[in-house]
Length: 356
Ligand code: GLA
Image 1 (cartoon, helix red, strand yellow):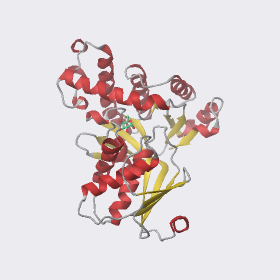
Image 2 (cartoon, rainbow, N blue to C red):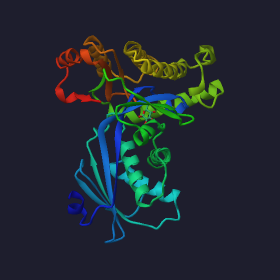
Image 3 (spheres, rainbow, N blue to C red):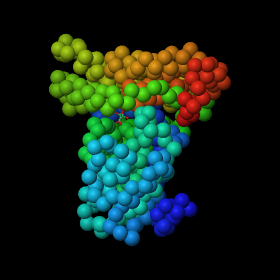
Image 4 (cartoon, rainbow, N blue to C red):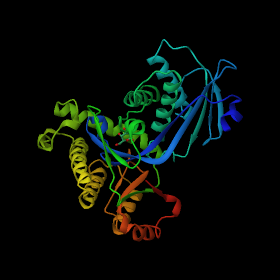
């Protein structure tokens, strides 16, 4: 037993949370719009037990092969993996101030590729909070766990993200599309038709740019809400978005992406239900064009993968996640898969491909 070997005590509770791929609906969640992600077969498992030896928490990450003891919950300056555990503890104890102060051992086992826009951090937070929820028998439901996980990332880590990743990681089911209204947090789960395949292809990641560019887009969309006099851009229809109202054409373009993207998510849901792969794929392509041209969140490497994928027979392809590199997601009909894969392999090595 790996837990016992590392911590010399028996494990008590554990929880698993998956990474996600967003099928359509990018940068719409924090504007109160719609998204449609799905879970990936990559996950993080957290196993915990009370540490009765001393007044310290201790965490071991199998991915980083690091074991660290800590007893203060202050964030480091580098946003490393331990900060997410510390943040979960802090937010959990804040939320439930009457629980007994407890020190824990944490084992983190994960096979999620890190820093590629498939939300390894949300999976880590959701799994940690679920394990604490079990230990303390606090009975928070999955939606509430997602809200707490978002608090960890926003209030503790300090990144301005939406609620998509945490919601799907906490509530989603593999093999199903998770349609979410990010304002009401109402969701629906839809089967992905059996003859559809989604595939990820990894691109180069512009890591440094990612966080700052994400925050810049976040601010630009907030500005557009001010200009339009609305609380949530996600509720705005295209007819209400007049170019003349915007002095700054960049802000207009960012808002245009979000407003059209929301409509695409609503349409995509319709085509998914009707098993219309052609139309769903077309929406993914339109989504990518808008993400690349109006939101300017793509890269040359990504655009090249999208072109190759479509030429190789994918029904649709787009950049998924926060932008500026990471994974593309391709929609392929089962009968076209062999041709698509063999052709794509002429350009990309085997380890770049990840099946959904
Ligand atoms: C990141 C954020 C999400 C969402 C996406 C873009 O993954 O964590 O909340 O905003 O980017 O759609």
